[in-house]
Image (cartoon, rainbow, N blue to C red; front, side):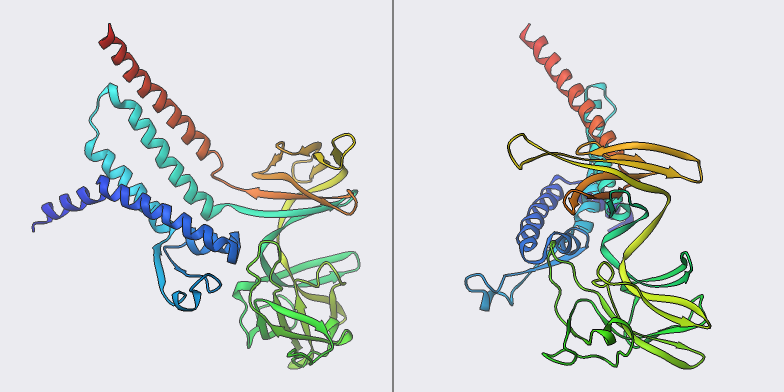
Length: 397
């Protein structure tokens, strides 16, 4: 077969309607099996496994009827990152193969362009969108957001008025029996153990838990023991990321600590001193610092009269930007987020007898693409139906 014939066959295959039907059928199957697994492993992990991957494998749940036998039979599926690009190529190739420049079908071009933008926009959202949160008490302020899913090991240099410098490492990059020796501080860290999810309890080495030679900080003072457990696979309960860390300076050990993301909101920082300077080490939810500060001035939880049914949540916040000198008050409530410096702050939750407010903070550089795509599809549909309607009216007359 000549290269020209091979290219023609490839274009015919990529732009064929049969491929469109096959890809759409696989899309339905992917959504079906992904939804089934969502109950077992949670929304976030189901999204990672099925929709943010090139291939996925579904297995029959063991707790279902016949699960002891059927659980060993895998069901392979193409993932979202494979189906999406193939649909995009199929649509573009098919359009270029069959499109002819005529005013009567220009609406179809708008429709196809809009669908292409939707596919590209969804891919861009998956790759670049971040979702974090920010908790504020009334009167409190913050200049950072925290991740829903990511954690980090951090070391901070503490001055008399607070932290002077912070160095952090993503939890995913941590490896057991490794040394972090490129710190901008006069000491090094040795990671003896790293746990994706752990059970931590008092009582030291009991019920399968171990102390791992911990002799400093909370692990020593509370006599804590640790053992590794499986992931919770839950959207309601977060995995307890934990590590056993030894600090060394000048070839001598300063002690070994247990650090965990479960400590951050419950206990003071675990501190130590090197050359008269105070430092702290810990594990926390990944922070992203902002070039501005939000202060919660007032939170309101409105209810329908005579009931405890919420009718509205609202937060009055002060936004202060030292770089631009801007300072303004903004009201954030349901369906009315704050959009500022590329970030969108949604009213998400509350706590502490209506004195604390949580904002879901979304950064999505491609947020305009779906709106533009929907406008293009709408224009195409209106135009195409108008042309068809005009033809039918002419035939009737």
